[in-house]
Length: 291
Image (tube, rainbow, N blue to C red):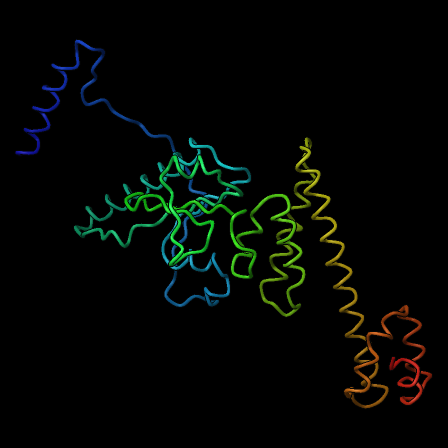
Protein backbone atom coordinates (compact mmCIF):
# COMPACT_ATOMS: atom_id res chain seq x y z
CA UNK A 1 0.00 0.00 0.00
CA UNK A 2 2.81 2.39 0.90
CA UNK A 3 4.39 1.76 -2.48
CA UNK A 4 1.11 2.43 -4.29
CA UNK A 5 0.66 5.67 -2.37
CA UNK A 6 4.17 6.76 -3.25
CA UNK A 7 3.63 5.90 -6.91
CA UNK A 8 0.42 7.94 -6.95
CA UNK A 9 2.11 10.89 -5.25
CA UNK A 10 5.10 10.72 -7.58
CA UNK A 11 2.88 10.69 -10.66
CA UNK A 12 0.88 13.70 -9.47
CA UNK A 13 4.04 15.50 -8.36
CA UNK A 14 5.82 15.03 -11.66
CA UNK A 15 2.68 15.83 -13.65
CA UNK A 16 2.32 19.08 -11.81
CA UNK A 17 5.95 20.08 -12.33
CA UNK A 18 6.29 18.97 -15.93
CA UNK A 19 2.93 20.06 -17.37
CA UNK A 20 4.13 23.59 -18.01
CA UNK A 21 6.97 22.22 -20.06
CA UNK A 22 5.05 19.85 -22.32
CA UNK A 23 2.54 17.02 -22.59
CA UNK A 24 2.39 14.61 -19.65
CA UNK A 25 0.65 11.23 -20.00
CA UNK A 26 0.08 9.42 -16.71
CA UNK A 27 0.01 5.60 -16.68
CA UNK A 28 0.41 5.36 -20.45
CA UNK A 29 0.20 1.78 -21.66
CA UNK A 30 3.24 0.55 -23.55
CA UNK A 31 2.50 -2.22 -26.04
CA UNK A 32 5.65 -3.96 -27.11
CA UNK A 33 5.83 -5.60 -30.52
CA UNK A 34 6.22 -9.35 -30.82
CA UNK A 35 9.93 -10.09 -30.97
CA UNK A 36 11.79 -13.26 -31.91
CA UNK A 37 15.12 -14.26 -30.48
CA UNK A 38 17.36 -15.76 -33.18
CA UNK A 39 18.66 -18.50 -30.87
CA UNK A 40 17.53 -19.21 -27.32
CA UNK A 41 19.80 -21.87 -25.84
CA UNK A 42 19.34 -23.86 -22.63
CA UNK A 43 22.04 -26.42 -21.70
CA UNK A 44 21.12 -29.96 -20.65
CA UNK A 45 22.75 -31.81 -17.71
CA UNK A 46 24.37 -34.53 -19.85
CA UNK A 47 25.17 -33.17 -23.32
CA UNK A 48 25.72 -35.57 -26.20
CA UNK A 49 29.11 -34.01 -27.03
CA UNK A 50 31.81 -32.44 -24.92
CA UNK A 51 31.25 -28.65 -24.98
CA UNK A 52 35.03 -28.21 -25.20
CA UNK A 53 34.93 -29.75 -28.68
CA UNK A 54 33.03 -26.66 -29.84
CA UNK A 55 35.74 -24.28 -28.60
CA UNK A 56 34.56 -20.75 -27.89
CA UNK A 57 31.02 -21.65 -28.92
CA UNK A 58 31.06 -24.42 -26.32
CA UNK A 59 32.09 -21.94 -23.62
CA UNK A 60 29.20 -19.69 -24.61
CA UNK A 61 26.87 -22.69 -24.37
CA UNK A 62 27.76 -23.52 -20.77
CA UNK A 63 24.77 -21.52 -19.53
CA UNK A 64 21.42 -20.28 -20.83
CA UNK A 65 22.02 -17.81 -23.63
CA UNK A 66 20.46 -15.68 -26.34
CA UNK A 67 22.52 -15.70 -29.54
CA UNK A 68 22.00 -12.99 -32.16
CA UNK A 69 24.23 -13.50 -35.25
CA UNK A 70 24.64 -10.70 -37.81
CA UNK A 71 25.83 -10.87 -41.40
CA UNK A 72 27.08 -7.27 -41.30
CA UNK A 73 28.33 -5.14 -38.45
CA UNK A 74 25.24 -4.30 -36.37
CA UNK A 75 24.24 -0.70 -35.81
CA UNK A 76 23.67 0.76 -32.36
CA UNK A 77 19.93 0.42 -32.91
CA UNK A 78 20.28 -3.26 -33.80
CA UNK A 79 22.34 -3.94 -30.67
CA UNK A 80 19.78 -2.06 -28.57
CA UNK A 81 17.00 -4.14 -30.12
CA UNK A 82 18.88 -7.28 -29.07
CA UNK A 83 19.10 -5.95 -25.52
CA UNK A 84 15.35 -5.22 -25.59
CA UNK A 85 14.78 -8.88 -26.47
CA UNK A 86 16.97 -9.90 -23.54
CA UNK A 87 15.01 -7.74 -21.12
CA UNK A 88 11.74 -9.10 -22.53
CA UNK A 89 12.99 -12.59 -21.73
CA UNK A 90 13.85 -11.40 -18.21
CA UNK A 91 10.28 -10.17 -17.90
CA UNK A 92 9.01 -13.66 -18.81
CA UNK A 93 11.32 -15.20 -16.22
CA UNK A 94 10.14 -12.77 -13.54
CA UNK A 95 6.46 -13.42 -14.26
CA UNK A 96 7.04 -17.18 -14.12
CA UNK A 97 8.86 -16.84 -10.80
CA UNK A 98 6.01 -14.75 -9.44
CA UNK A 99 3.38 -17.29 -10.51
CA UNK A 100 5.34 -20.11 -8.91
CA UNK A 101 6.17 -17.99 -5.85
CA UNK A 102 9.90 -18.59 -6.28
CA UNK A 103 12.89 -16.30 -6.28
CA UNK A 104 14.82 -15.53 -9.47
CA UNK A 105 18.57 -15.80 -8.97
CA UNK A 106 20.75 -13.41 -10.94
CA UNK A 107 22.99 -16.30 -11.95
CA UNK A 108 20.03 -18.04 -13.64
CA UNK A 109 19.37 -15.16 -16.01
CA UNK A 110 20.54 -15.81 -19.59
CA UNK A 111 23.31 -13.82 -21.22
CA UNK A 112 23.02 -12.16 -24.62
CA UNK A 113 25.76 -12.86 -27.15
CA UNK A 114 25.81 -10.57 -30.19
CA UNK A 115 27.83 -12.40 -32.86
CA UNK A 116 29.08 -9.67 -35.19
CA UNK A 117 31.43 -10.18 -38.17
CA UNK A 118 33.08 -6.94 -37.04
CA UNK A 119 32.61 -4.29 -34.39
CA UNK A 120 34.21 -0.86 -34.65
CA UNK A 121 35.88 0.73 -31.61
CA UNK A 122 33.13 3.37 -31.68
CA UNK A 123 30.39 0.74 -31.45
CA UNK A 124 32.12 -1.07 -28.59
CA UNK A 125 32.86 2.14 -26.69
CA UNK A 126 29.29 3.42 -27.10
CA UNK A 127 28.03 0.42 -25.11
CA UNK A 128 30.89 0.40 -22.61
CA UNK A 129 32.26 -2.91 -23.88
CA UNK A 130 35.44 -4.19 -22.24
CA UNK A 131 37.76 -7.14 -22.82
CA UNK A 132 38.24 -9.78 -20.12
CA UNK A 133 41.55 -11.25 -21.22
CA UNK A 134 42.05 -13.10 -17.94
CA UNK A 135 39.09 -15.32 -18.74
CA UNK A 136 38.13 -14.82 -22.39
CA UNK A 137 39.75 -14.46 -25.79
CA UNK A 138 40.49 -11.19 -27.59
CA UNK A 139 37.48 -10.09 -29.61
CA UNK A 140 34.93 -10.84 -26.85
CA UNK A 141 33.70 -7.56 -25.34
CA UNK A 142 31.50 -7.51 -22.24
CA UNK A 143 29.04 -4.73 -21.55
CA UNK A 144 28.59 -3.50 -17.94
CA UNK A 145 27.59 -6.39 -15.69
CA UNK A 146 23.90 -5.48 -15.24
CA UNK A 147 23.30 -5.82 -19.00
CA UNK A 148 24.58 -9.44 -19.07
CA UNK A 149 25.57 -8.90 -22.69
CA UNK A 150 28.68 -9.58 -24.77
CA UNK A 151 29.59 -8.53 -28.31
CA UNK A 152 31.79 -11.01 -30.15
CA UNK A 153 33.77 -9.23 -32.89
CA UNK A 154 34.50 -12.27 -35.04
CA UNK A 155 37.19 -10.59 -37.13
CA UNK A 156 39.16 -9.85 -33.94
CA UNK A 157 39.17 -13.45 -32.67
CA UNK A 158 42.53 -15.23 -32.75
CA UNK A 159 42.90 -17.71 -35.61
CA UNK A 160 42.89 -20.95 -33.61
CA UNK A 161 40.91 -24.16 -33.53
CA UNK A 162 39.04 -22.81 -30.52
CA UNK A 163 37.48 -20.01 -32.59
CA UNK A 164 36.93 -21.92 -35.86
CA UNK A 165 33.19 -22.48 -35.44
CA UNK A 166 32.61 -18.83 -34.59
CA UNK A 167 34.79 -17.59 -37.45
CA UNK A 168 32.64 -19.55 -39.92
CA UNK A 169 29.99 -16.91 -39.14
CA UNK A 170 32.35 -14.12 -40.18
CA UNK A 171 32.73 -12.33 -43.50
CA UNK A 172 35.12 -12.17 -46.43
CA UNK A 173 38.64 -13.46 -45.72
CA UNK A 174 37.78 -14.42 -42.14
CA UNK A 175 35.05 -16.78 -43.35
CA UNK A 176 37.07 -17.94 -46.36
CA UNK A 177 40.00 -18.97 -44.16
CA UNK A 178 37.64 -20.68 -41.71
CA UNK A 179 36.14 -22.77 -44.54
CA UNK A 180 39.66 -23.81 -45.60
CA UNK A 181 40.46 -24.82 -42.02
CA UNK A 182 37.24 -26.81 -41.89
CA UNK A 183 38.21 -28.67 -45.07
CA UNK A 184 41.62 -29.41 -43.55
CA UNK A 185 40.12 -31.18 -40.54
CA UNK A 186 40.54 -34.98 -40.50
CA UNK A 187 37.86 -36.92 -42.35
CA UNK A 188 36.89 -38.66 -39.12
CA UNK A 189 36.18 -35.37 -37.31
CA UNK A 190 32.52 -35.70 -36.25
CA UNK A 191 31.73 -32.03 -36.94
CA UNK A 192 33.43 -31.73 -40.31
CA UNK A 193 30.88 -33.49 -42.53
CA UNK A 194 27.75 -32.00 -40.94
CA UNK A 195 29.06 -28.43 -40.98
CA UNK A 196 30.29 -28.72 -44.57
CA UNK A 197 26.81 -29.89 -45.57
CA UNK A 198 25.31 -26.80 -43.90
CA UNK A 199 27.84 -24.49 -45.57
CA UNK A 200 27.20 -25.95 -49.00
CA UNK A 201 23.42 -25.88 -48.49
CA UNK A 202 23.83 -22.19 -47.74
CA UNK A 203 25.68 -21.83 -51.05
CA UNK A 204 22.76 -23.43 -52.90
CA UNK A 205 20.23 -21.18 -51.17
CA UNK A 206 22.25 -18.11 -52.16
CA UNK A 207 22.30 -19.20 -55.78
CA UNK A 208 18.50 -19.43 -55.89
CA UNK A 209 18.03 -15.78 -54.95
CA UNK A 210 16.65 -13.55 -57.69
CA UNK A 211 18.86 -10.60 -56.80
CA UNK A 212 22.45 -11.16 -55.73
CA UNK A 213 24.69 -8.48 -54.33
CA UNK A 214 28.35 -8.31 -55.22
CA UNK A 215 29.16 -9.75 -51.78
CA UNK A 216 26.74 -12.64 -52.39
CA UNK A 217 28.35 -13.42 -55.76
CA UNK A 218 31.83 -13.39 -54.24
CA UNK A 219 30.69 -15.64 -51.40
CA UNK A 220 29.15 -18.11 -53.85
CA UNK A 221 32.43 -18.28 -55.76
CA UNK A 222 34.39 -18.99 -52.58
CA UNK A 223 31.94 -21.61 -51.34
CA UNK A 224 31.86 -23.23 -54.80
CA UNK A 225 35.64 -23.54 -54.77
CA UNK A 226 35.50 -25.06 -51.30
CA UNK A 227 32.74 -27.44 -52.41
CA UNK A 228 34.73 -28.62 -55.42
CA UNK A 229 37.79 -29.17 -53.24
CA UNK A 230 35.77 -31.15 -50.71
CA UNK A 231 34.15 -33.21 -53.48
CA UNK A 232 37.52 -34.02 -55.06
CA UNK A 233 38.85 -34.96 -51.65
CA UNK A 234 35.87 -37.25 -51.02
CA UNK A 235 36.34 -38.93 -54.40
CA UNK A 236 40.02 -39.53 -53.73
CA UNK A 237 39.27 -40.90 -50.28
CA UNK A 238 36.73 -43.27 -51.82
CA UNK A 239 39.28 -44.43 -54.39
CA UNK A 240 41.80 -45.02 -51.60
CA UNK A 241 39.36 -47.27 -49.76
CA UNK A 242 38.70 -49.26 -52.95
CA UNK A 243 42.41 -49.61 -53.70
CA UNK A 244 43.18 -50.74 -50.17
CA UNK A 245 40.47 -53.40 -50.43
CA UNK A 246 41.82 -54.51 -53.81
CA UNK A 247 45.34 -54.97 -52.42
CA UNK A 248 44.01 -56.90 -49.42
CA UNK A 249 42.09 -59.29 -51.68
CA UNK A 250 45.01 -59.67 -54.09
CA UNK A 251 47.76 -60.26 -51.50
CA UNK A 252 45.94 -61.38 -48.36
CA UNK A 253 46.76 -58.32 -46.24
CA UNK A 254 47.85 -54.69 -46.48
CA UNK A 255 51.23 -54.41 -44.80
CA UNK A 256 53.43 -51.32 -44.38
CA UNK A 257 55.30 -51.89 -47.65
CA UNK A 258 52.13 -52.07 -49.74
CA UNK A 259 50.69 -49.05 -47.92
CA UNK A 260 53.62 -46.92 -49.09
CA UNK A 261 52.72 -47.32 -52.78
CA UNK A 262 49.05 -46.38 -52.51
CA UNK A 263 49.57 -42.64 -53.10
CA UNK A 264 51.62 -43.37 -56.24
CA UNK A 265 49.00 -45.77 -57.56
CA UNK A 266 46.28 -43.17 -57.03
CA UNK A 267 48.00 -40.95 -59.61
CA UNK A 268 46.62 -43.32 -62.25
CA UNK A 269 42.98 -43.60 -63.37
CA UNK A 270 41.01 -46.28 -61.46
CA UNK A 271 40.88 -48.66 -64.41
CA UNK A 272 44.68 -48.43 -64.80
CA UNK A 273 45.66 -49.04 -61.17
CA UNK A 274 43.08 -51.86 -61.00
CA UNK A 275 44.70 -53.56 -64.03
CA UNK A 276 48.20 -53.15 -62.56
CA UNK A 277 47.20 -54.57 -59.18
CA UNK A 278 45.64 -57.62 -60.82
CA UNK A 279 48.46 -58.28 -63.32
CA UNK A 280 51.66 -57.46 -61.41
CA UNK A 281 53.10 -59.44 -58.55
CA UNK A 282 53.73 -57.92 -55.12
CA UNK A 283 57.45 -57.58 -55.89
CA UNK A 284 56.77 -55.95 -59.26
CA UNK A 285 54.36 -53.43 -57.73
CA UNK A 286 56.83 -52.51 -54.99
CA UNK A 287 59.72 -52.18 -57.44
CA UNK A 288 57.70 -49.99 -59.80
CA UNK A 289 55.82 -47.72 -57.37
CA UNK A 290 57.89 -47.67 -54.21
CA UNK A 291 59.49 -44.33 -55.15
